[in-house]
Image (cartoon, helix red, strand yellow):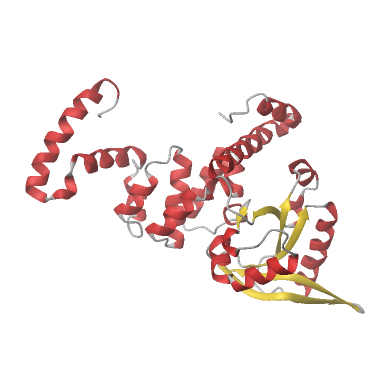
Length: 314
């Protein structure tokens, strides 16, 4: 109502309306708050959705969400905030850490993202794409430069509460160095978790080096053992998460890891330049969506070339 040619009219009417409402109902109806209310009505036009969200989200939550430019990003944070019962502080931290862009769901075509958010809103189960992230921010571990894999594992156990918060709601710690006995040999899985919403075990392997194809075979071995010996009735198949210092996206895509229930993600042990990280994440999301759109035509390489010619990610 107040956009376009009527923007000037809106700028005049809001202060006038605010003065009357403040006099009758208090400072909550300042011109600034009225402008936010207008923006809120534009961002969340569906009354049924607002009614559901307002059972868990306060006006302060919505104030944090409204500045986000992309509608799907706003919907994602609103739904996750409702499902996981985030405080305003937690929501603010999730937005600042670029959580949406770090999830696998953000790299899917928009219609897929919209469908998964709608399913979650209707009471459906969260999917792995909404749970797993890349990269994971582990700067809270306080690791020195030159740390070892054992240092990383020990720091995670010491800061397990923070680590679980970074993994996301629903994760429960099960074991460290889980012994896997096969024949006459023993093998040890770094970390084992259970995810309540996914209803499945999550095996985590920590790698200080760049992701290597051999890591897939190791994780498949662990997952098969967990499937046979640890999976309880009614649970989904175990899923693996390989946390590594870096990875080659083309190698990861070629190996079709998701078909083996394996996810690969980088971890950042030290605080990154958030602007650089945001640009990198936007670039990864755009490339993933272009490749998905071109997959039917077998033109993923052309998509990558198109992105390289447009480094801004716009």
